[in-house]
Length: 343
Image 1 (cartoon, rainbow, N blue to C red):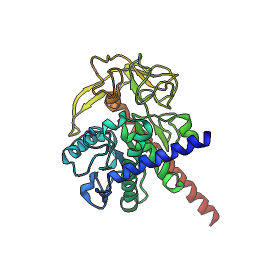
Image 2 (cartoon, rainbow, N blue to C red):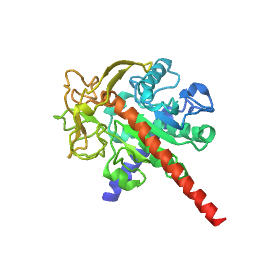
Image 3 (cartoon, rainbow, N blue to C red):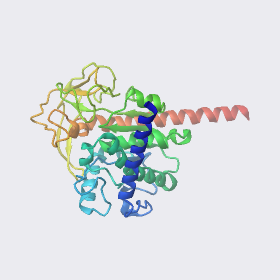
């Protein structure tokens, strides 16, 4: 009986994946050699020391189909805008690469998870193809920061699990900022190179958190009964010690052009929930910062993950890049000494 149930589940999964594939049979997978398939692609020589590969959050409603069409210019404008809102955190010292992809519509998050994952496979296939194109044509051995938000964070985790399994590629990873999604003990057990960040300057790690009010105990991001890894962006620690709002360097509320319209230093403090791994946000109220859409009821501060902690994240990206480059320089110096001794 158990084997029969497993067989049925596998057949259902294959059928759902096939459904996602056949839905897009009329729309070819994007060719990332074409500039029009990149929201941002800063290729070419640069004095910046690293690259960012950024995966945008979901902006497509999913009313017409579960996956966004890349012929949908109105949604692509929102896609670029959502990318610009977070871009300033990452691009001070890094070239920026953000592909358009056939992202999953928001309506698909109301589907059963197995069915949703079938459609998500289309989105991930595009992201992986874009990353492989970037590696072949743009990277040239430069350090990489993988970053995403929400659906982009879920896909960023999958990208690191998949494409960074190669040690040569993994050596290039400064960090993966997968803000607004979860990573569990089971995920890490299945893929040991998904290493959760433990401090402010560790590298090759995954940085993630999910913001919520203290009374929340269930959400799309962290379902009840699930615990995620997380790190507090105010203290860069992983225990439950509260960090006061005085450690918040600045909440920044940005627009679709990437401009900071409002900045509030010391807006909020935060601590990690020992049970859920959620980032409990203090000093603000759900009434002042509502969930915004039905998927995120008031008290789930998902839409503000980046904005509440903008300046702390911006500073941390530089700190991890500095640590990565210092380690690389030290290793290179050690190798030079060894070569000299051998000679």
